[in-house]
Length: 414
Image (tube, rainbow, N blue to C red; front, side, top):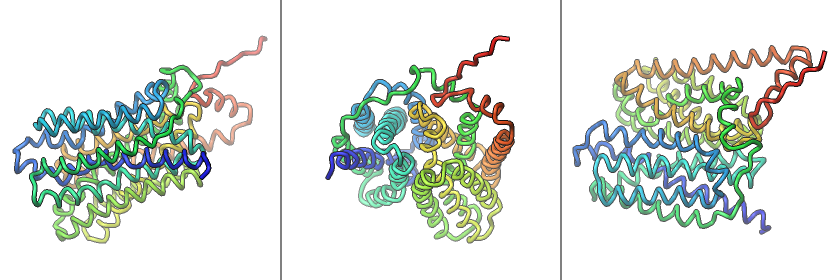
């Protein structure tokens, strides 16, 4: 193989395999009832262990601009996986509610994942500059695939073990695989951006277009992430067949995997704007259908579509970041993924606060619909600006450069 091909294969291995390790967070969906039954942990702690990885990874990704500017991808990967190892070790040796919340949920699956994912994006944009969304879609699909792989494995282990021993076996196995995979990461330079570190975030958010995309991501993400863990319970509340509840969980998880793959590939080939519009529109329709669902075909169809659109949104993020801020990719991607993680954290909170019943799905579908309205208004404004005279249009488009910095405006002397 050519050296470039070897480097590409090494990056794929080093970024793909660790996703299965951090996908261990999905195993908590199957473990939660056993934790409550065997260890009598509080519902608050059990819920926090599932949701806090999203919040802590979002906060970590907000710092990806600093991390990738000063730490090379290989070293940053080791830092992330190292925190994963430390968090698991402490939680498995001294198990307890507070210890699991801090070390397992926040440190291992939150901060550790955020660092590793930021390093993965920094490596991908250097090695696959023309296929950033496609490759990123593959590695995020691997993370979602964990729900289909690790949940059944952990459930099978519980038959002959306690929930903690089952998690120890699964966690130790994926931790070893992650360490082996990171060894393959080649030595790549830090990501150089077009402006000084610390200036990009505010400047990007001040751009109407990019700020709109971040807002839409936060509004749309809650529906899909809440559906991932709650569609089975919702099926039961609708008095549908028990087998349908199990099928719904598998369908939404499989849809998320496929959506992330398709979102990445289609963003590279058709454009991220088109993918974003289709994803948000279909997600709003599916959310409304799920809210009003009363029959099995409508319910399963809505669940499948929500899985696809939730995954498609994640798959489109890297290309959206690259198209809107090519000189500040790490910052833009970190902001968008942080927005998605924040939305994923908010979704279960809203659903739980509203009792997880029909009202919860209505509110989450309403948030997605608001996101669709904002997107349509923005596109209409953009189309209107495109019809303006060339001089004024260039003046508006030229207010910011590709790194997110406001260009200086020079006035001609009168």
